[in-house]
Image 1: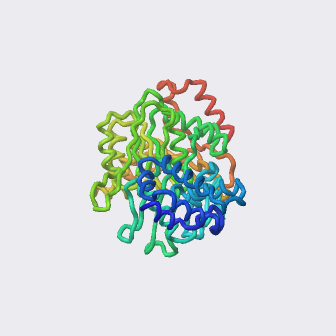
Image 2: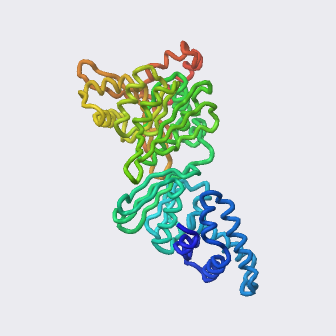
Image 3: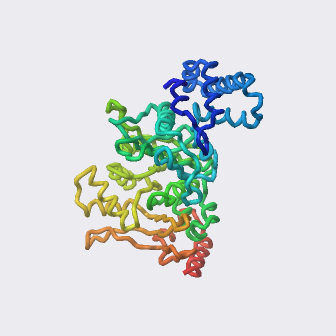
Length: 438
C-alpha cells in the first residue's frame, strides 16, 4: 500500500476525537510536497527515514502563511497525529505507549477497550471508519508477511515489539474488524515480584523455586488471562544459568532477558498458498535433537502433547509448559484428549504417561477485581488397580482468601537435601511455615 493510500485510509485519524480541518489540510499539503512512492518504499526498509521525511515535509508545509496563526503546540500535535496515522498505530499509539495497559481490544472502528491491572476500561480513542482500521491492520501484518482477506479472515502474529496480535475481519466479524493486542511488560516478573504482588505466599514461592531447581516437570494451567505466561516466565527466572534452554511457542511471548543460553523457536502458520506450515509438534520433535537441558513449551494445545510426554518420560526432566484447564483434574482430561489427536492409544496408557511425566500442576486464577493468584498446587500419581491418574491437592487458595493452606507436602520435598537444592534446616523451616499457615 502506498503512502498516498495509507494517508487516505487513515483520513481523519486522531487519538480521541473526530478529525480536525487542520489535520486534513496538513495531509493535503504534505502529499503535495513529498513523494508518496519514495516514502512508501522506505516504510519497510528504513522506518526512521520515512518518519524524518514526513516531519520535514510538515515543516515545509508550515512555512505557508495560512499556518501563521496556528500555535506551535498545535502544530506539533498535528505532526504527531499525521506521522502516527501514516506510519504508526494511529489512535492506538497512546495506549501502546502506556506501560500500565496490558491488552488492547478493538471491536470495530468505534469501540476501543483496554485492560489495566486486570480490569477493562473503555477508551476514548476512535477510528474514523472501517477503512482506517483495516489500513492499520494491513500495516501491522504486512511487514510480517501476513495478510487477512475474505479467503483468510483470521490471523495471529507477533509484532517486532513483542506484542501478540490477533485479527478477525468480516464476514466472520459482524460489526467490523476485531483487533486484539496483548502487550508484555518490559521487565519480567520474578517469583519474588509475584509474592510481593500477592499472587502467592512465601511457602508457595519457595516450593516452586525448589521444584524448578530440582528439575521437576511442571504444568501451569488456568483460564485465559489468569497469568499462566507470567508465572511461567517467573519460573524460568529460577532456571540455573549453566543450562541450555529451548523454548517452543506458537507466538513468542516468553522472555529470557538475563539467561545466557536460550534457543527460542516459534511455530509458523501456513502461507497464503497453503504451504510452509511448521507446527509446535514439529518444533518439539526437533528440539529433542538440540541437546536441551530444559524444554519450555509456551502452551500445549494439540498433538504436541504426545511428544512432550515422551520427552518428559525419557530423560528430559525439568521441562515446563502451560495449558488451558479449569483445574488440575481437568489437566489430565485435557492432556488425554490432546494425546489422542496424535495417536489412538488406550486412555489408561495415556493417563499412566501423564502421571509419570508431571511432578506438579500449578493452577492460576483471576479474582473479581482482576488480581491473578495461584489457586492450587497438585501432584499426580497413577493408581494401577483402578488404572486412572489420581490428582492430589497439596495447596489450595479459595477466591475469598488472601492466603491459601497447605494440605500435604510434595513427595519430593525430602529429596532436596540430597539434591543440594536446599539443606535440612531450610526444609524444616518450610514445613513449620506450612503448618503454621494451615
